[in-house]
Amino acid sequence: MTWIQSLLSLGCLAAVVGRVASLSGVVENPTAQPWNVSRLADPGSIDAAFSTKTVVDDQGLQWSVWTHVQFTDYALRVTSNSTLCDPNVAQIHGYIDVGIGKHFFFWFFESRRNPSTDPLFLWLNGGPGSSSLIGLFMELGPCQVRAGGTGTTVNPYSWNSIGNIIFLDQPVDTGFSYSDNASAATFTSADAAKDVYAFLQIFLAANSQYRHLPFHTLGESYGGHYVPAVARAIVDNNANATANATSGLLPINLVSIAIGNGITDPLNQYSSYPLMAADTKYGPIVGSDVIATVQAAVPTCLNMIRGCYQTLNSGICSNATDYCNTYVLDGAFVNNRNIYDMRVKCSVNVVDCSDYPMMDDISTYLNLNSTLVSLGLNRTFVMSSDVVYSRFTGSGDWMMPYVNDIPPVMAKGISVLIYAGDADYICNWIGNKAWVLNLTWPGQRQFQNTSDLIWISPSTKQPAGEIRSYDTFNFMKIYGAGHLVPYDQPQVALDMITAWTNSSKYFVKGSTEPSASAASDLSVSRRQGVVWAAIAIVLSSLVSISGIF
Image 1 (cartoon, rainbow, N blue to C red):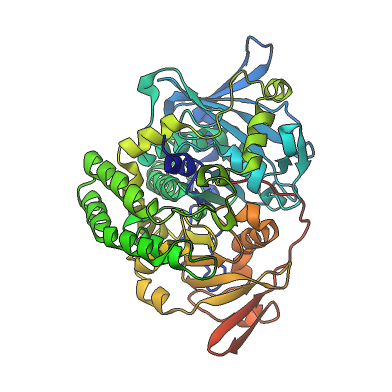
Image 2: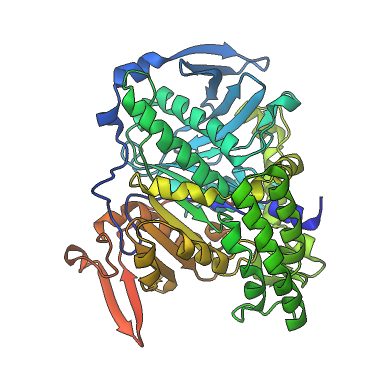
């Protein structure tokens, strides 16, 4: 595997979800409300659709196994004996087993605040092939791993400070997930989304206390593919569940999706690499001659991506991936900088520099015998799978236009947050802003004409980023963060997700100014034609957060 493959396998995409409102000017869509289980489903039919039994494995560990009449090839195998990471909250972990030989590992943590009313988050790291436990132990989860992998410490900025969180290792063969045979392999984000949807159905059927909660699908890096695909699977299947209320299918209460430093629309993102390499805030990182060479390769790259979008042909899309990553993405990054954080200069070479030391600590900790025994596992943890990476790039999935799943999701009243740290190169803010401005949807013109607002972190009281928002669509640029926003700016990231999940209290649909009711919480002043917005958000009972990718 080349160095660029190794770097990208860390997870160049992810997804974070918020609520049916925006950070700076969006609330509800009155004509397209999110699904609500209490009004769309027969709870009795859901309870009757699944069954459970108890099994004991060869290590003597007791597992509860849940099955669902609509997903006969799937079984949820869970235990809740672990007190790792955050012993003060309820935990559930285990596998979703699929008959053809797939086994997906997940780890759930209840909210530290109010589990019965706080939102439910699904977190997906990227790669393709990177474990979502990177997010758990390095970015936004309840704990972080100590140096050397000897144990964990509480993360005071964990997103389970405000919500219940599921970390899911997918696609199969990622992290603690595994397959029994070659026929169980997954090659596309669309196919992976089918497994995620089945998991959510059985998990929520088995844990009725979470069914009614606002649900947010979050991701990062290659999560820019995963999150739209999962959201599309949910809204399409919600229609089926609603049409047949006695089927036992649960209309999942999806209210928002969020993607951090993602790769979502390659056609509008790949032209950003020479621009980011030349950007003067943290660079330029290469000379003008290199930038000119890369810029000359951009038209061919975009034509190849355009062919992929038009044909959805695996070979055409795979060829586009090979050419564009070699001559555009990799071509502009020849200096000794961290590809995930341009502020970090490498002392040896780019590959070593772009590895985070904590990644090795996470692998060490998760492969400790004491950790494996506590989780009831007898497998080796794989941080980033070369096999999964090769499957997805070989199938052409990398260049596929999963951006096309976003408008149909928005049409169902689902809010969208796209955020990006300004120091990331590989999934940079320039490319992410380009695709959100070019997205075709009913509010495109208004979104393009909306001003960027300077966002003041309610915790630091300092400018922390910029927001552009119209209706249910939102873009946020985060200052002083690389590819892993919750890792680089943990307090600001928690402020962001808190504002996102509570923003209906502060913002008015389609407005770049605060509503009258929010005037006491939001102060706006204009200086030299720039809108400065100070968002005052009440952050109650903040505890810990850890996670990554």
